Length: 556
Image 1 (cartoon, rainbow, N blue to C red):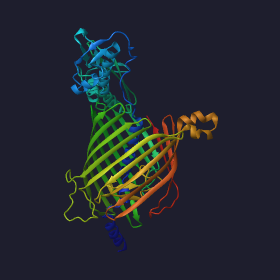
Image 2 (cartoon, rainbow, N blue to C red):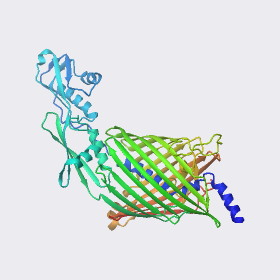
Image 3 (cartoon, rainbow, N blue to C red):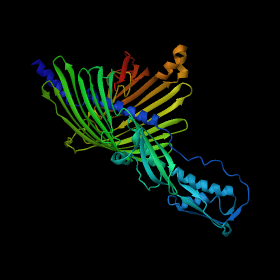
């Protein structure tokens, strides 16, 4: 009788979404870690793109001049009349020397180069300047041929057409735009196993260029073992994982990753695939996870989740120092939970995400911003919200706004400061899988399980990666060089809050600590010691420090 009463009480408690329940799903935290890694790597790895080529020394302003009353430009199909007039206005009408004529041509070439058309050149055709009219001719550079080579020579046939056609948004005869080729190289270099570069050489036709794409590849199929202590205290902190990666399964610059992970009471399996199509990138991800959590000496909670995500990304704009990308994603999630043998109401959720992200390199800092609007759907098998839901009832049909900002910049001679701000806003009560959870390796560090969750909130992660000049003085000189190349210490401070609409409660979290990473051949190790600054009762209070470690071994 007592066990039935306890189970009944637990059933009532579990009917509402609890932050701890969602923290049990191992895939949720892994996706937060993956998203953090992707943001940081994308910003840190972005390099300035090709700009205006150096035109060489300018001609000296000397020699005879010719009276030019009118300056015309032929062959410029990619510049508007307004743009051309603005470019030529400083040079005519006036008496033009050779240096002035060269300046006008360089201004036109620079205008093309700023748009990415770096092979377009301006010339002076034969003419009689005695008429008072100067005519300049623009030869817009085009692609004459595209050739793919690797370590064994030229790649031809269907394989070359697939690899080039899925990466580069251009074809023979099309005007050469450097941004198109940068996009293609990025699509090829998405693959861990690929190092792609390109070279230009003059073609046979006027204005034509042959493009040589060198695509070197190794470790197409790879595997890695990982051990970490990033799991929750309730479900088991020690986690073992296996990652299997395969590139070019379809021969289309595609990449696939299979991940299996397990703790004492959790198992997770996920499959990720990515296929490019020029300025588009299509991604799919399938996941299955399960967990078993003791609730009392008499009962335990078992849960399983199946999820699927289909994402399409489109590169809206590329510049020398920036990129802007739009994303569209469909998400489906089906969760089941049991207390002992009693089945709780399953949750079926589906959502549509519309997002945009922007990366920009400045003179002193790198910045990225992103924003996403998510709509809970009543399609794809999702639950429908019944009429008359109360304010504290979670919604399957909702509107959620999320986004963030990351900045990477030097902090004098101390090192590199990385700040990562994440925001979430919803005025509706959400299921736990859609809430913002705080108190983990990917959010607010210093905790071994989530301590805050809500429908809206924010958190700020601050990492200071110490410069070798700042910390290596404590290392013996005989091993200083070796340690500097392999070891990276950091200091961190994280703060955040989450507001739960259903309970009208705001919970805070904060943590401070130190960390270090070490890389040696095929082994990468990292660890941190974090001290929580706010306890589970929302009080400013330091608790026992939390140590988290991670070892990655590239097995093949």
